[in-house]
Amino acid sequence: MAMKDLADDLGARREKALAMGGAEAIARQHGEGKLTVRERMARLFDPGSFQEIGLLAQPDLEAERARKIEEFRQLINPYIAAGGALIDDVIDPRETRPVLIRALEMAATKKIDRPWKKHGIMPV
Image (cartoon, rainbow, N blue to C red):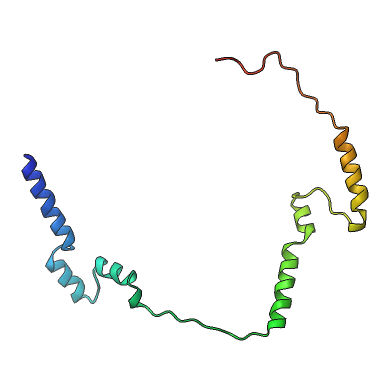
């Protein structure tokens, strides 16, 4: 096939695609009470084709605040994190200083034993 024939064939296919299967296919869709895909997409993305409604409720603000506080307290409970092994220990706030002193003393005297290696990174 020559290049001109290929271009003409491509143009015909494009026209058919833009016609959405032809006038008879569009008439059949409309006859069944349906829209074509292009028409449905145009309505979907058309901001004027739907209504937006905002609802503002006036709840009891103190009750809502108390409910939210309780909800957050359940989410930030340290015992849940400890149960999931996400933290090492849960301590009483009065024991913070002695626990920190012990941890820092252990870290200061910590020695890491690494295996002896004959060679480091091998040259390439």
